Length: 417
Image 1: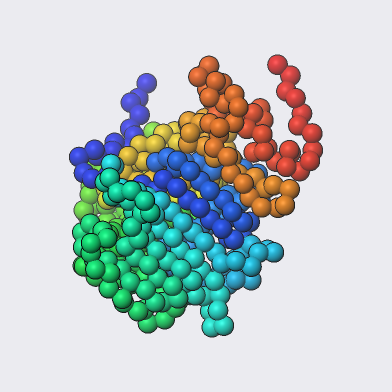
Image 2 (image 1 turned 90 degrees about the horizontal axis):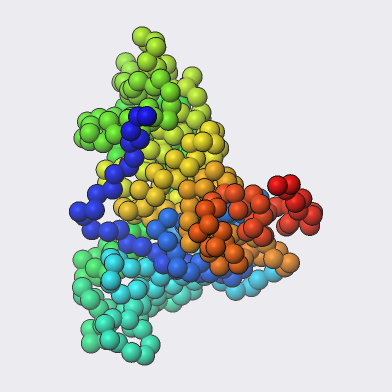
């Protein structure tokens, strides 16, 4: 049997920041949702309409706020009318707890947004931590309301440091994104760099088949429309890593020989894939959906300088079921260097997951989303210890509200053994 090439994590460099906790209030169906003890690799499971994509979009929303500004992210989602939970009057609240490195203090970032007469307003925003043996209330080293506030400078801000009043130009600006551009606020800058580096994927096979303008690009776009550019960059700057990607792809796509990104006379890039039995390569527009999608995922997961956070939505689309457990292992290897969130309906992908890594999301009787960690469902740990896999447990309805027939009120049919 051929040796399986996997993403080999580099343990020599610093670990990426890790999110340990997320709380969301009044964001569409997420009226009040908490995710505790978030693992480096986390899969979100649930029926259609349960809120998986909404949790996914919370990360995308934050990423867009930091990259393009709050107003852009707010308007693109239909403003308060479409964003805020129906029947709720309060602001949207997003709160994360994270560590910059293992064994460093937990930092809490709180962002509260509402809509004013002229658009979105940052009602409240703060950063706080508790250092060392500090007791009592955590120290809030950044504190803003509607564009007015103050922040403490220094590498390790504490109560002894002076907090300087620094008003923002308007109330729709995010203080971390603004102050994080200045060297005197390294902790704020670290959070800004962390969030702006997130990669939240909405891969489109049709976009990946395109012929973009030639020129190397380091990071795959959300839709994958610059896949040839990234292949060009890897060939020029990281040829060894590109060879690893191709080796992993060849083990999952029979007879594939190589992938090329060739410049055309009109200045565009043409992605071509060559099969071993044939002399001429095939243009990407004629390549199978699954081949392009697996190539795109491997490019992201095996990035030589990976993003600190990767979001992947429903990777099972277009992929053969037997490849999904392999993809789960690729995700696990990548989680040594990046934190991963995956939404899925696939029992095959779940077969590569552990109970602590799986969250079940469902709608309660009021129509709001609730989340439960699979390891907290009675009996799940015992089943797994006895040899059961998460995908099989889900299909056998041991995860309860993750079954769409239960949510729809239909009886669950017992399987005959």
